[in-house]
Length: 80
Ligand SMILES: [Zn+2]
View 1 (tube, rainbow, N blue to C red):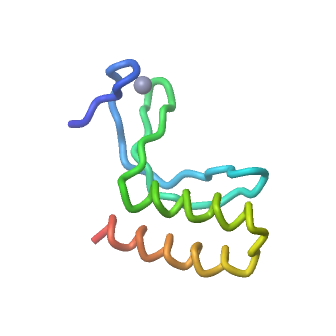
View 2 (cartoon, rainbow, N blue to C red):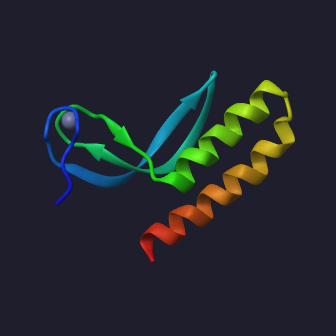
């Protein structure tokens, strides 16, 4: 069982909504502390979030759709 780095609470894998610069991206796979709510993302998900942040900076809204599709693939990978 994984534990939270912040409070040593139990960490469980779940899908969360992440708000990045006012845009909410739903169903991001993350490990969430059941005690304090701290979220932990794996490397692939973290880079995916950085991609979104970058494309919001560049105002490439259309690109977000592609990234959200990638997120669904990530979700499937987690479940598999
Ligand atoms: Zn915690």
